[in-house]
Image (cartoon, rainbow, N blue to C red; front, side):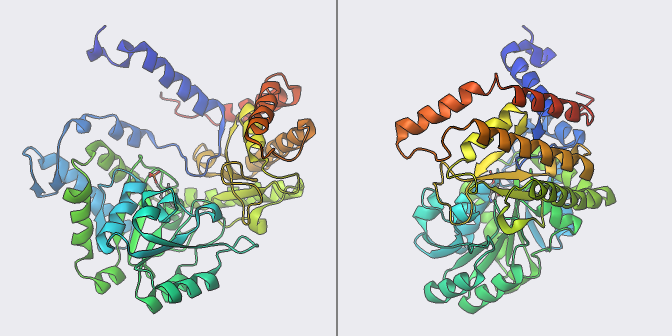
Length: 449
Ligand SMILES: *Cc1c(COP(=O)(O)O)cnc(C)c1O
């Protein structure tokens, strides 16, 4: 064994990596928070930059030998500032969740009141959900969506006036319409709160001009870098001009919370990957890419509707489509997710507005087009994908004996197990999987690997 010759020295891990590459190539990746990075980003990630310690910030490091790391981190900061039109950017957060915690700690004290979109309405765990540390450390007042699936701005206005939160989040993980930045800016203004846009899901669309930018409305912007933005796993915290006006020290406060407050050495290989992704995101090709994501998602939504599938908000304006399975029964997301998996389509089950089942066994399916768009697929392929998904749902409903997920835990597990066991031998799913493979092979992924 010679580890200096590469990953071949660890056959167990090498095999799992090769299997994962094959899985990514041969399936339709439709989890809306996932994407495929460019080869340039991959190379930055798998580089010698991982060897270096760089605690601190460019020009202010605790260790020596950081002259080249400084070049990389400064480039990432400058590119982020230019791309999003902000005066300040921190590119060191290890991921989105720690970035959000850092934002809380920069502007709040434990016990302060905060407001975010309820998790089961489409918000993120870190926006104050009860099982997240953010829901335990702060007094969390969630706002919701209305029965039509749109954010209940009036409820948020009332709650903010009553509870006077210190910080308000606008951002989502399961929402198919434009985020109402302007309305939330008024709400935050009225109670003096910091308004933070968490654009993790839509930042690539924002850059492409396919979703409005929050830059003129909010004080702070957080985005993960690995979703529609197509970078490595990581995150950035940006302070807007409006944020600097509210508190001229806001940038420094964020810097101090990230380091030394929360983190140690930045992941320099990730910082390089972020810098490369931001350069890519500034190109006309990326603008076309971001707009194509939305066109694809609209084409997918239209096809599903044509096939009689019900959608939350009846359609989409972004990269995501939410299927409402309640016309078929309650809590059926788990079955459709497993069936789609069997057919080579990767998605996740999701709650729908006014979820009639539970957060663990919800009645919806969340689909996204960013990864398929990266592979080069366009509207005709989305119509085909829409038909494939519709057929999976129809077959699932045909073979499901009971259209209600049992409440009893044992009975529920048994029902899910029994359903799963029959999937591999089902002729319809075999046929659909073969069609998925043909489609995938027409759009090669990482041909150089
Ligand atoms: C993905 C996401 C996060 C968290 O990102 P991680 O990198 O998974 O920690 C936070 N907020 C929103 C809105 C997200 O979509």
